[in-house]
Image (cartoon, rainbow, N blue to C red):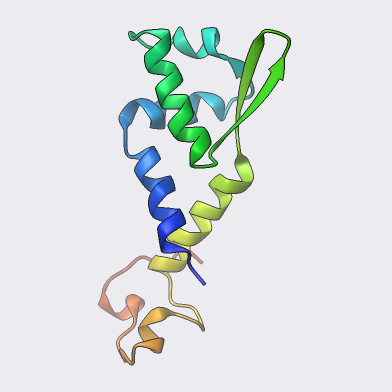
Length: 115
Protein backbone atom coordinates (compact mmCIF):
# COMPACT_ATOMS: atom_id res chain seq x y z
CA UNK A 1 0.00 0.00 0.00
CA UNK A 2 1.30 3.44 -0.90
CA UNK A 3 2.00 5.82 1.98
CA UNK A 4 0.89 9.02 0.23
CA UNK A 5 1.83 11.30 3.15
CA UNK A 6 5.39 9.97 3.39
CA UNK A 7 5.93 9.95 -0.36
CA UNK A 8 4.59 13.49 -0.73
CA UNK A 9 7.09 14.65 1.90
CA UNK A 10 9.93 13.03 -0.03
CA UNK A 11 8.79 14.39 -3.40
CA UNK A 12 8.38 17.86 -1.87
CA UNK A 13 11.97 17.68 -0.61
CA UNK A 14 13.14 16.82 -4.13
CA UNK A 15 10.97 19.50 -5.76
CA UNK A 16 13.58 22.18 -5.05
CA UNK A 17 16.23 22.36 -7.84
CA UNK A 18 19.09 22.81 -5.35
CA UNK A 19 18.03 19.80 -3.28
CA UNK A 20 17.61 17.73 -6.43
CA UNK A 21 21.16 18.71 -7.45
CA UNK A 22 22.46 17.79 -3.98
CA UNK A 23 20.85 14.36 -4.32
CA UNK A 24 22.44 13.99 -7.75
CA UNK A 25 25.87 14.99 -6.38
CA UNK A 26 25.52 12.51 -3.51
CA UNK A 27 24.64 9.73 -5.94
CA UNK A 28 28.39 9.65 -6.67
CA UNK A 29 29.25 8.85 -3.05
CA UNK A 30 29.69 10.25 0.43
CA UNK A 31 30.85 13.87 0.74
CA UNK A 32 31.39 16.47 3.44
CA UNK A 33 29.47 19.76 3.33
CA UNK A 34 32.47 21.69 2.01
CA UNK A 35 32.70 19.35 -0.99
CA UNK A 36 29.00 19.74 -1.74
CA UNK A 37 29.16 23.50 -1.30
CA UNK A 38 31.77 23.78 -4.10
CA UNK A 39 28.98 23.10 -6.59
CA UNK A 40 26.76 25.99 -5.48
CA UNK A 41 26.84 29.76 -5.16
CA UNK A 42 25.10 29.98 -1.81
CA UNK A 43 26.24 30.02 1.80
CA UNK A 44 26.92 27.16 4.19
CA UNK A 45 23.76 27.96 6.24
CA UNK A 46 21.68 27.64 3.07
CA UNK A 47 23.30 24.28 2.35
CA UNK A 48 22.57 23.21 5.93
CA UNK A 49 18.90 24.05 5.42
CA UNK A 50 18.72 21.99 2.22
CA UNK A 51 20.55 19.06 3.84
CA UNK A 52 18.17 19.22 6.82
CA UNK A 53 15.13 18.97 4.53
CA UNK A 54 16.68 16.02 2.69
CA UNK A 55 17.65 14.21 5.90
CA UNK A 56 14.21 14.76 7.46
CA UNK A 57 12.67 13.24 4.33
CA UNK A 58 14.97 10.25 4.76
CA UNK A 59 16.79 10.82 1.47
CA UNK A 60 20.21 11.69 2.92
CA UNK A 61 22.19 9.91 5.63
CA UNK A 62 24.55 11.79 7.96
CA UNK A 63 27.71 10.26 9.42
CA UNK A 64 29.67 12.18 12.05
CA UNK A 65 33.44 11.81 12.13
CA UNK A 66 34.97 14.07 14.74
CA UNK A 67 34.03 17.64 13.86
CA UNK A 68 32.95 16.73 10.34
CA UNK A 69 29.62 15.56 8.97
CA UNK A 70 29.61 13.35 5.92
CA UNK A 71 26.51 13.00 3.77
CA UNK A 72 25.39 10.16 1.54
CA UNK A 73 22.31 9.34 -0.44
CA UNK A 74 19.93 6.87 1.19
CA UNK A 75 19.67 4.58 -1.83
CA UNK A 76 17.06 2.38 -0.15
CA UNK A 77 14.70 5.35 0.26
CA UNK A 78 15.43 6.51 -3.31
CA UNK A 79 14.61 3.05 -4.65
CA UNK A 80 11.33 3.09 -2.68
CA UNK A 81 10.38 6.34 -4.43
CA UNK A 82 11.21 4.89 -7.84
CA UNK A 83 9.07 1.84 -7.08
CA UNK A 84 6.21 4.02 -5.83
CA UNK A 85 6.28 6.08 -9.04
CA UNK A 86 6.47 2.90 -11.12
CA UNK A 87 3.44 1.55 -9.24
CA UNK A 88 1.49 4.73 -9.95
CA UNK A 89 2.08 4.64 -13.70
CA UNK A 90 1.92 0.87 -14.22
CA UNK A 91 -1.02 -1.49 -14.12
CA UNK A 92 -0.57 -4.09 -11.41
CA UNK A 93 -2.80 -6.67 -9.81
CA UNK A 94 -3.45 -4.37 -6.85
CA UNK A 95 -3.84 -1.22 -8.96
CA UNK A 96 -5.95 1.47 -7.31
CA UNK A 97 -7.94 1.80 -10.56
CA UNK A 98 -9.30 -1.70 -10.01
CA UNK A 99 -10.03 -1.03 -6.34
CA UNK A 100 -12.22 1.95 -7.19
CA UNK A 101 -14.02 0.09 -9.96
CA UNK A 102 -12.42 1.83 -12.94
CA UNK A 103 -12.50 -0.66 -15.78
CA UNK A 104 -10.04 1.36 -17.86
CA UNK A 105 -6.78 1.18 -16.01
CA UNK A 106 -3.67 3.30 -16.54
CA UNK A 107 -2.28 1.39 -19.50
CA UNK A 108 -5.48 1.92 -21.46
CA UNK A 109 -5.53 5.68 -20.86
CA UNK A 110 -2.02 6.38 -22.06
CA UNK A 111 0.38 5.93 -19.13
CA UNK A 112 3.78 4.44 -19.89
CA UNK A 113 4.39 0.92 -18.70
CA UNK A 114 7.85 0.59 -17.10
CA UNK A 115 7.77 -3.22 -16.76
